[in-house]
Image (cartoon, rainbow, N blue to C red; front, side, top):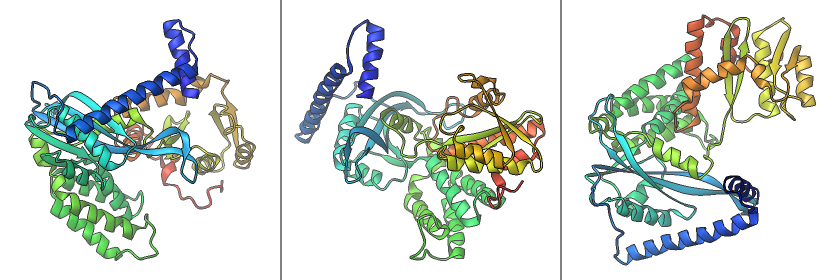
Length: 424
């Protein structure tokens, strides 16, 4: 009931009413049943040969984006009693094509959405009806955009949705970073250089060269073994060789750009967020700012539990061997004031300095977080956390160069060995 109660409070404040959460729940569920029934009737009518009305003006370019996510429901389901269920979302957008130059990219016009927790076949019919309504038959060009999910291509072919299929460039680039780390080690200069080389080949449409490079590294490590887990370098490389071989005709990015077509699925990624929580969840940035050296750096972790907090502060301790440290932080309940965390700080000879409640802005790092957010997060809609993470790290490297803190020990906090982190 919590969300309905919150909705009632918001409506009462705006409208001056005295509604309660139960009333809102009854109305919302009744309206939902009406919408679902209307949508089912449209699908039934289309299957009987009655197409929905199309727009008078045909689109020059219609892009059908598809992606999946997870949505939290009220009822627990399954053997594990989880409230999370998978859903599928489509964003159908009309575009004015660009002219093939960076100065005049494709311009999105109108976007409509379809989403369901039903199976792929039912989702495909919903997408087809909405695409018909948006003028799929009249559009000069229809593209299907998405990642390399193994359900998108069969759905698109079954429903005959597209003239061309495009794999989102940024998802493909993520696969290359993953493959480079598998080939030459995680976060090594060699793997970063290989990732840049592969991304250049991808951008330039040199798929033969790209696949040959991946095959060379895969053959060097050998075929996957039965005991290899999904993250083992051999299996990661083998999987990515197959991925790029399967989708090579969907990655002709120079041709796509030349026609003025979009090559990223940002509109669809944004739609997924409107309907649900992303599958990948959130990430936490553990940031540290040396007020004496004007040095800002930090590291990302998937969660902010005691385990991740311990690792971050052990790394911080290694950056300042033999020195007494005073760390200013807020008094986050049950984390920063946890007895185990306080005991770790004492063992590391780190003295916490708490900001007053609701006054964390007194901490100097907050001002630098504001600049970091403006440079890296404002007006963005990243396809994955890894893309955003790399942009934040690029900004931190840029800041080190501007301030002259490249050689400061804090600037290397992410590259510290995780062995003997408590030595100080």
